[in-house]
View 1 (tube, rainbow, N blue to C red):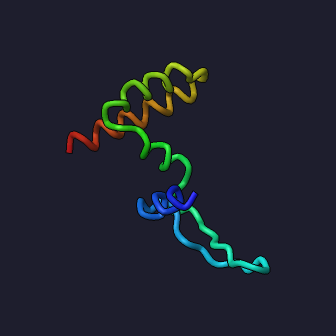
View 2: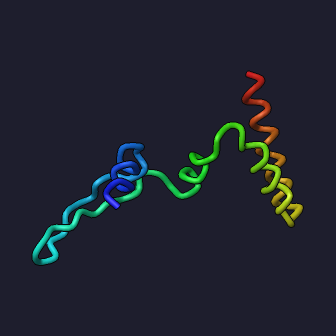
Length: 82
């Protein structure tokens, strides 16, 4: 467990929040530094982006959600053309 905590701390995903006294020993507490979505995105490599996006797009069942995604893609295209 210490190895996992150290890795999360060293990569900036969590930070030490405090120390709680539980009687015999102190217990370190940690808090998140990034949200769940950013953490999951950090796990995806550049080579995996297209296949993951394809799978996610195919799972969209709402025209409204698909339209919103299309708007985001258009915004990103404009940003890249700058």
